[in-house]
Image (tube, rainbow over all chains, first blue to last red; front, side, top):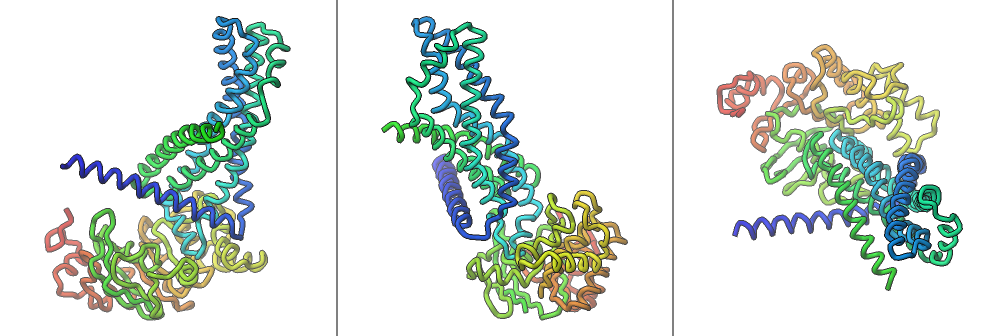
Length: 259
Length: 248
């Protein structure tokens, strides 16, 4: 009986949490559609989420492409199909790994920081102070982050894709000794505009997920604990939930696009 | 001006307020005392409508603020200032920008006017010359004064003070209270002060109320509270560990 009661309580907690998250997103979107727009906050967020993530994304992208090329080359060699190394690396990065890994990297670097910053503002009453001025904190803290993530993510994904293909090229051509023409020449035969757009659409939706989950967890920091511990828990939850949602949503989006 | 009627509130399953009734008149300074964790700050947050009551009403000038929509709440809040315990200054902004924030964002004033009003308010709280410093670069007392300047700058009719002297040394604490008294005599705002500093705060208060076990246990002039025969009030005032209040 106790077990059923506990299960019920946990289910209720999750369902109400999801409801609260949805309401948070709807309120943010409503806020985003009405002026005044906080352009300066938006530029700051673009710099933080986008510009400051470029180096990390480029680095991870290049190594991801490199390792993919390494694996593809050795395994395709067994089948006598090394010519497909280029298209395999490119399609894997453009359609899946680029948007997903870039989003997870942004979650780890910028999402966690967003949660911590908003969480500290919550526990030190800075969010209450904004409300006490008759202003809407969502407009200052969440809307700029949402827009910035939606704009930054496709750009970061493009950088990841480009560096990923380039990293694959370096490994396949310069290290493994493949012909440059073989690696690059086959790519246009298999890569369509549709594939590139698929990756970019995904990255836009991941931008929404990262900013939504990170800001939500920070905004309701008191719900997961108090003080520094509450902020630390909220940050962990934001990274875990955001990463999980990215992978799950990726599956559904791929299934939907592939129909 | 402020009426609290039969207010109930539970937080995390614990009943914090159990039928609070309290009236504060226009221009009055009311001090709210009570044991830590007994809901004084929760009560303040109800007056500011940062919390919604489970039951009961909070009325400002006869208007129940519980059912108001966000636009009307914004209107009510523009009449209320809240000095939070830690100051709640925006750490990424300078003292000047902190004080200027409500003028710029809420009132949309021009730059020159904002500058004039901010510098005037900083001068009022004795912070001239500190406008370019960041909250982490100034002392706790200066942070409280900067937060007070941010509250005063848009001239609210009601100011809620949540432990304005906590964490400050006695001299700075006294200076903050003197400042509140002096500003009150000039601006005539209505004030509710939550504090543990009985002797010093009582000197500037018109009335004091004690919140105990979720209800107002005693209310009266500071002298009446200090000389109360109620054993709970007596023990709290004297700070004795033995008595009806269990601190364990």
